[in-house]
Image 1: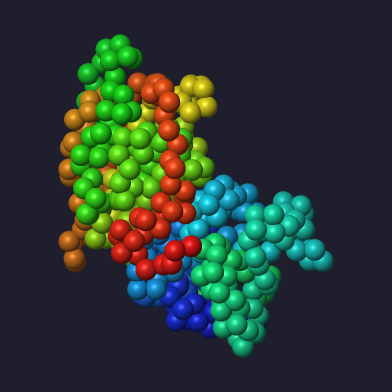
Image 2 (image 1 turned 60 degrees about the horizontal axis):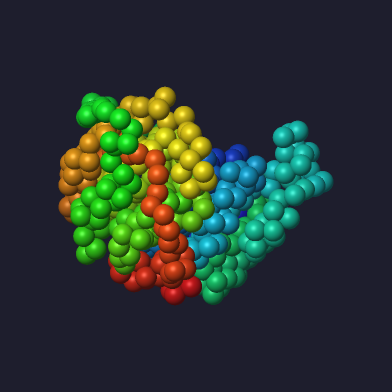
Amino acid sequence: MIEAAQFIEATLARGFSWYAGVPCSYLTPFINYVLQAPSLHYVSSANEGDAVALIAGVTLGARDGRRGITMMQNSGLGNAVSPLTSLTWTFRLPQLLIVTWRGQPGTADEPQHALMGPVTPAMLDTMEIPWELFPTDAAAIGPALDRALAHMDATGRPYALVMQKGSVAPYALKPQIRPAPRARCEVRTQWRGGAPDALPSRRDALQRVIAHTPAASTVVLASTGFCGRELYALEDRPNQLYMVGSMGCVASFALGLALVRPDLHVVAIDGDGAALMRMGNFATLGAYGPSNLAHVLLDNGAHDSTGAQATVSPNVSFAGVAAACGYASAVEGDRLELLDDGLAAAAPAAPGASAPGARFVRLMIRAGTPDGLPRPTITPAEVKSRLARHIGADHGEN
């Protein structure tokens, strides 16, 4: 058994200062320590996949050797499969995973861990994530972390430490002054109305986004599917990244980047199907979102890239959800001018300035995509490396 401080201070010495995750009783000493350490940052995520995506965003923008750790119970590996296999693996965005081993064979545990416990090592192996047991002796901490770092630096991909019960001694959480809830903004709406084919197109909306996101000071992260493909077709710029897979993760990915890089204006372009898939992101962005983050939802009421099957988005006031979750501003409607207002208002935070929160814009657009829409010829790893160079991030060319 080790002390929480022994492991966390060893990770800090190696650049790990950002943490995200979902609690497990095995992780309690770590979380309690991180929450009370002024030099560390912890984001409580709605689910494990969102935490993986957030730390991927931290990795993308990291400077000065900063790194991130995602912590989860092994039951949460199911929630994290998509970003682990199509975001961190595909784009080569390494992070250290601490995965608890509930239901480990030979140990008594609750019924819900009876299957996940035995298959946890096989799941990590199948996802090509090297792993080893979490160190339980102080002398083993440094070598374990160095093996993890060697793999992460060589491949650009995650490494996991699997934590057994009783690996870390208890660490008390002292009474905390909880941050005050963010004020609820007023939802603004601007509806012109009219026939569905009179709505703006995705192309119209993306052209407005490009006009408000100069390459020198902004980053645009586009959701998977036709959104990223059409943005690429309009103009392939070094400040843009086109997600593939990881559906629903663009908002948490953007949050990680915005938090670690307050000098940049970060724009996440989301889709209605993707936003519905991971609506817990709204709560996390509402609580942690900084003023340099804009969340833009282009809603055509359909899964356009898979045959235009309808979503349930017409039943949802996404701006109402954003406002209820603590966004600084929330607007929805069918007028392109909404993007002018929403993106012009967001800007990098000045040093020492307060961070009132992220901004949200939901624009209704018409369904449909231009014929012959190309796929990016630049690979995900290449587009990540290009963006990292452009914003001065200091990770390698993996």
